[in-house]
Length: 252
Ligand SMILES: Nc1ncnc2c1ncn2[C@@H]1O[C@H](COP(=O)(O)OP(=O)(O)OP(=O)(O)O)[C@@H](O)[C@H]1O
Image 1 (cartoon, rainbow, N blue to C red):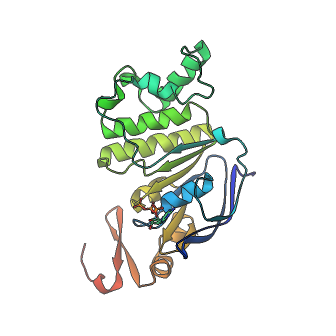
Image 2: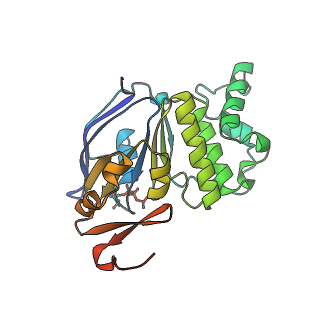
């Protein structure tokens, strides 16, 4: 199967230290790659490096000649509560070559399609500033989907959302990935969310990384190597929790 994106030996160095080093992977159509790791591990830096927005990058990114093939939603986008722009118009700003003040019938259909697949139709004519955090995340997703990207790069689209809204966003992204063959790079802190939806996981921490299926990466030996200390992976019901070895006696 041909890949839509190929990352070869990607490294970023800042102030003489490596944020990450030698990351290589191929992303296939419809794949859902979760990038996980603690604060400051370099997850956002990795997305920026893939997009060519990061200085001090070495390595290569191939397979995406057209910029619009990449749909990027950066971390923590902010829209002022008083912003009067209606959701429909906000999503239409994502259309390429939107230089005219009107939309063609085909463009309106594109916007409606993006609103529908992200479950935003019911508030399409409300001001975006008045929406909840989860609703806004879906609108940001719709704004990039309107261009029919081949790859979605989503930087923590579920942070600061309650569990129900997190699941709703992840379900929508997973559905788009499966039904439209869109590849996804989904940054999250939440390894349980990653384990539920990802076909592969890239775990970053302390300049080290591991890439593979959930079972290949989310295990005691790989995590202990990444963190450089013995780590136990404790299963608490349906959830996984990382426990440093000295605290492994903690009952859950
Ligand atoms: N251009 C730069 N100049 C200086 N430091 C940088 C630069 N780019 C990234 N960094 C540093 O790289 C590290 C990784 O940051 P990054 O935001 O990628 O981590 P993250 O895993 O996304 O964190 P979080 O989960 O908190 O969002 C941080 O220590 C950050 O300060």
